[in-house]
Length: 174
Image (cartoon, rainbow, N blue to C red):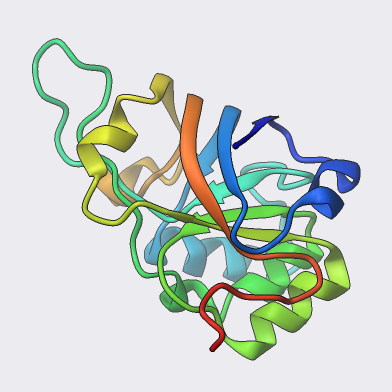
């Protein structure tokens, strides 16, 4: 089990191989479908993005309502393929890591190889466990999207698996 402190660097990313088990500690962003559409539109129009994606990691998730006494509700990964139409543009903008579940398109895998990025799979069905790794949370963009707003989370030892590495090797390949 590797322990990685975020943000990701090219040196760290190059050491990761599909199937590696990793514990992530540091700041990540959440963004689901609606936030991705807005980020893509901003990038396409040449406008400024509301967050700097350089070397950052996006978790494809939106939290459930926050129960009393907690800082965030359950926060499990959503299906990553829904972000595929927008992902190559965000990788071009500097994004280095993505966390979600499920396969990625060949277009995304090719873009990951081109820009040197990695895709992590989080444990599906373990949203309450993922929430326990979150130490701080703040909404940083698109607050009107409610649960799909972009949040900045500080996670401590969030368990993930390298699903696709920078060579394009995928754990989903036969």
